[in-house]
Amino acid sequence: MQDATHEPASTPSPEEGTTARRARWRSVGPGLVVAATGIGAGDLVATLVVGGRFGYTLLWAVVVGCVIRIAFAEGAARWHLATGRTLFDGWRSLGSWTLPYFGFYALLWGFVYGATAMSASALPLAALFPGVADLKVWGVGTALLGLAFVWCNRYRAVERLLTVLIGTMFVVVLVLAVRVVPDAGAAFAGLWPTVPDGSVVYTLGVVGGVGGTITMAAYGYWVNAKGWNGPGWMRVMRLDNATAYVTTAVFTVAMIIVGAELLHATQATLDNSRGLLDVGDELERRFDPFTAKLFLVGFFATSFSSLVGVWHGVSLLFSDYVAHLPHRVALLGGGVTAGPDEGASDGAREVASGARERSPAFRFYLLWLTFPPITLLFLDRPFALIIGYGVLGALFLPFLAGTLLVLLNRREMPAPWRSGPLSNTMLVLAALLFVVLCVEQIRTLPW
Image (cartoon, helix red, strand yellow):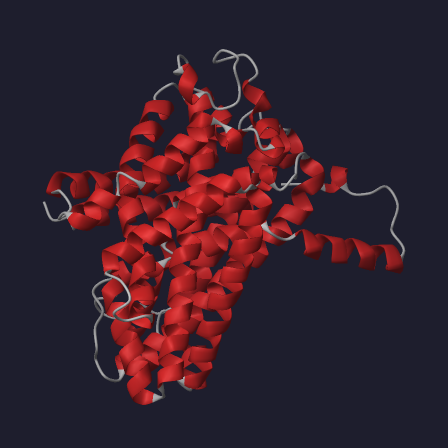
């Protein structure tokens, strides 16, 4: 991919260059939102499990995973900036089948994810304030707080909050990684690619699970919501995206270090988000109550940032999905009132103007993420629902990888911004990886 045609005609002075670099760094934001949203309680568990089982051996997989995710998110945002069209414009051009697929996926995924996000956010609060309220009350409270915040604010407020939360979780995890005194030699050795016996699935999971799933599709929308429109923002977007996944890589490496030092030596195991409370207990036993509470604060920042990010980002995706339905219900109009072919390319401008965030479709999905999932906090999750959720969730990333690979090489993509050999290679590797993970996840579901 070449971008020489978009370089300035003259070389800037050192002072101008410094000012431009500072302006680019001040612009960083959507990538941090992706990082904060993509790292949830499930990622904490996964990385601690990997560190607990295999020590530092799979640190190299974190680096590979972040490189793949950088290419993935960059491709989605490059489509938005180069074409001035949203991802749904592109998906719809591939065939009408993409719309019902996403709609069914989004409704089922949101129903189950909502309950998962509430539970994950409630656990550290219940541990920090024992006896104050029941776990379900904390869960409902965090969901309502997330709903109220996203309902009453726009992207910029969401970005500011998530920047604070990711800063909190980043600092907490780094402090913990230093406190457990990592084995520097073993850590550096872990950067050399090796696959221990019985670690193939875990290795693929680390590579494929570093920093988000559906939130990568939301990245282009957050880029537009930030006010970035047109190829002139490409360099800033790439800096932003790289910053996000370098942050994610450092966070993930730190969690593997904590897992290796806390769990690997003691052979302790974690099965789910509730098991993270055991990590807090181990930190208290090994260090002091303050360190344990610090971990719980980081645990809450991680979980609640995911909740707020999904409440905003996936609602934004859903509102654009509704705007592209051929015969959508007027009540859920996504901001564009034209037919399926008229004004479709206005989607990016609608996102940038904030019209999508004010649309009934956006608010409908906010309510969908909040209230129906509350029932799952009080009931055992229905078996068929979990099977369907697992299957659709596994299928989404291969769908996203495959469609990006096609869209970024089509004629509709301006020639200077089509994918080059490196981008295509990374997207092909991502597609193959996610297909393997998809098959493995479906195979291991509790059929």
